[in-house]
Image 1 (cartoon, rainbow, N blue to C red):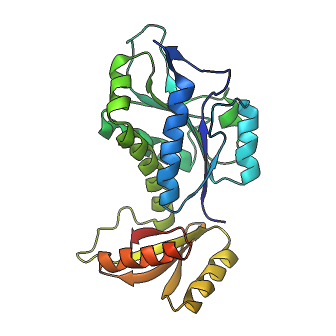
Image 2 (cartoon, rainbow, N blue to C red; image 1 turned 120 degrees about the vertical axis):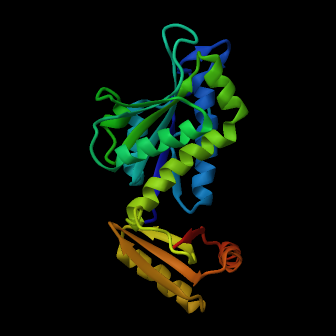
Image 3 (cartoon, helix red, strand yellow; image 1 turned 180 degrees about the horizontal axis):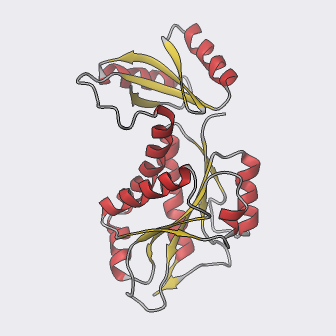
Length: 261
């Protein structure tokens, strides 16, 4: 199975979350989750949503949705709120503990959001949240600015696409750094491109896709790093050739992502 991200839009239905001057947290959460999910899907990642419309599910049920889907990561999107309006500003990510790859992902997301303009308030440990406690995979809850702080709302509204991209990039950065394991290796003068067609935990699934692509006459290899197997087609030093192959594979129904090797 390819890498699967469970995205949770916090609150929903009768549970509006925090509110400020008619603005409801549940609406901001859903808009961000759908935008982030689209970016991840376009990058070849499977996405499972706990909700895609204005409905309520309990936090325990949301954790169960992710568990039943066999998701590799769980990311819940929220807006923060302070006792007094315009009291605090910035992004913060909540974790059950400070162990494992979820810490790297949380820090990457916060750093990317800081590049958009949000203050980086760091990480907070919360053991009382069901979506962090009941999930069987690395889980984090991202508080994307304070809903009762005008500066944070203005930043989100004027740079909404950049905010969604920052969250998605933080997720993707962590996934692919973990797979490649070469973050500290200098980039060579010439760059090799390939089209990633699948990312699997099960080597048999990777091998099946490898055979399928080679039967189509497409040069393909499987690279292993960590616990994942990446199926990559058409190594080339030409970005244009890689993009052309990506378009060809997409027309055949494959989810693809151009990567550098």
